Image (cartoon, rainbow, N blue to C red; front, top):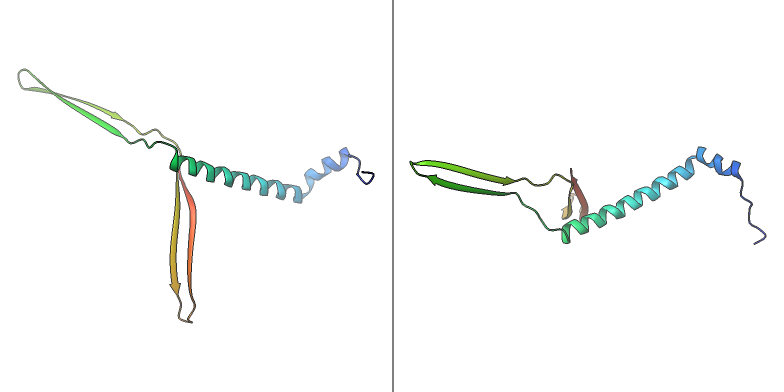
Length: 110
């Protein structure tokens, strides 16, 4: 406990001008954003109900051959759509190199 460095306000304020603390902060921010995006994808894919556009048409025939068309249409709410995907593939090259690969990710539509 005797080895602890005392707090220095000048050293603290000087750290804002260095690049390494900013790189570490950006790394943490990107990691938190990625975890949040994965959580949002899982939530939207498995727990959110899907809403589709509904269209109702009522045709009402009036006396004297008049027809009234009453059309109601519900629009899909604007928002963010998150679509996870997984793709797999195999390959073979002319130098007898063979392999299998794949990728997974998230597509976000605004």
